[in-house]
Image (cartoon, rainbow, N blue to C red; front, side, top):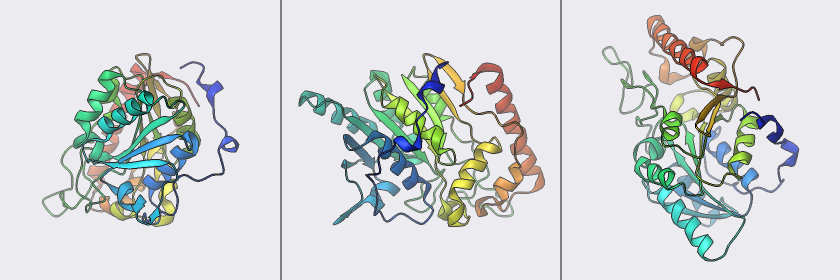
Length: 305
């Protein structure tokens, strides 16, 4: 991890070709931005596997196919297993210098697709798995997923006089995949694109399994203006509710440490899914953030990127 600064990728190095465009995603879709940037780094020799979810729904509308590289829709739970099969098949055919890359949402990763992902990591298959995390099952109607944060309102975790949205915490997927002894794992945010691009570039060179968990806001499910996606994604990092980190060689490294956290309340209450929160609710979330960061700073190393 100590030499990561030498691996910084410049925006000028990216191809001007587009490998995911003309899709039917909602304005301000963070997931489509995450996918577009990833393929800009990985390039045309990519085999993309996309399960049932937002990106397959908006990217495979015949005859206006949004992918200009090879791409296939997988079963909802089978992103990682199909990735493993694609990679094995390409190698059997003697194909070289390719990337088998999957793009799955939070529900398709932390819930429905977790078994296949766990197996692929256990086998150290040479694949890149990207989770675009918009914190709910957005494609099917904004239902709660295992990565929905505490107190967020969804259509299956309503907020009212007696209920205050989701009653469970967001699963720590980054640490869960790291616990498998994965070859490389990272968190990212579309609000910090250069950090995301660098991690994609690094993952493309890993001889084994790579997992990148990218924070990708959804204006429809979260309730904010469509022009604010990048700033919302950046604010999540700046207020400490999301972090930028890496895992390899059995070590965790924090990549970004805000000098001072921005307002958690401003971040939360700027989204309609949190409008029901009161002052005490926000204080509880801040306390949980502080406890998480205290552990991270105590246990993880730090390498500013």
